[in-house]
Image 1 (cartoon, rainbow, N blue to C red):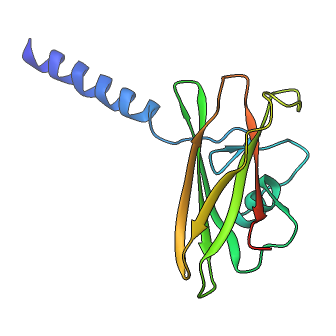
Image 2 (cartoon, rainbow, N blue to C red; image 1 turned 180 degrees about the horizontal axis):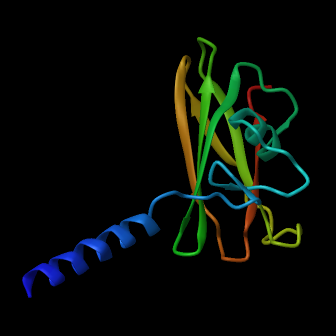
Length: 145
């Protein structure tokens, strides 16, 4: 009686383990971040180019990584900004939220000032204001001019 029960539990645990194995990304998601089907994203650099807009010039400041995840139905984003220069830089950033139809999901956020010291990395973290916001653009501008 114990042997059939043990065999059943073993087979069931293997089946359950096999179902949770590999993670398959959807076609409209790259590196965890939402993307449009018409833009081919094959690297993190391509993702950053597709998601980041620079208003004007921004010497010595670069977005070096983007991470996205879904938290309770809301898009959460971490963006790493790096200052390659020696001096601190004053910049401002905001997120533009986009709905599933490519339209603005909300009014534009206000600009958020940020001081990044020389030779440092700073992580900007945000969460979408609503579930309607299914995509985003990070807009950055220089405030030192």
